[in-house]
Image (cartoon, rainbow, N blue to C red):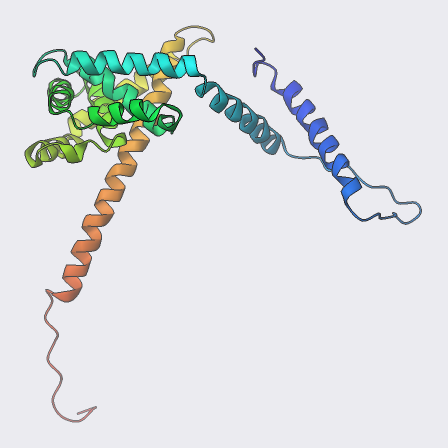
Length: 271
């Protein structure tokens, strides 16, 4: 499979491909003669534009791969196994429940569910409302959030796992299926400064180790990017929720101003 190991080669090819594409469209345009002595200059596109074109092409190919029926079936079977195990008994197999929500969040955020049969889509949607699976996924989050919140600089891995669980609940919109008490508990994790700091430290650790030498610690490089994506998702969730709260608060304050309007001065102006 072709890699990005020699980006200049890809850019040079993209420059030629783009020029050929534009050249092929000239036959569809009205004929135009350049004045004598003038020649048409070939446009030279920026490296950024050409790399974006290359990435767009790769993304489209990746989307096609995601529609592979064998790949989809295997992802579905993994989800089915973990959801079944994680739904057996409350308080047990919390790891499976966590993994089930990870696969669920992946299928949802990549818009892949629609490529499965309607029967399997309905089955997957039922997992999101399964009380035992939800409770066990919540227990996994609770355990890791508790460990990751004990002391700054300790149990950073647990803090990271807690954030992965949070991402699963947020991206699948499953928080609304939990009790108000558990929803408030989850929101408290998002406001816990120690948990936030420890999760960020784990991201830093993975990014540092994954940057030391090419070809080494590649799992740390990938985990760092996943952590960053999770942080971005949690940030967007908080900003959206915060905006709703702020808008309601500001509207209430506008209707009920707390500051008293000073009395009008008596007498004529200037007196």
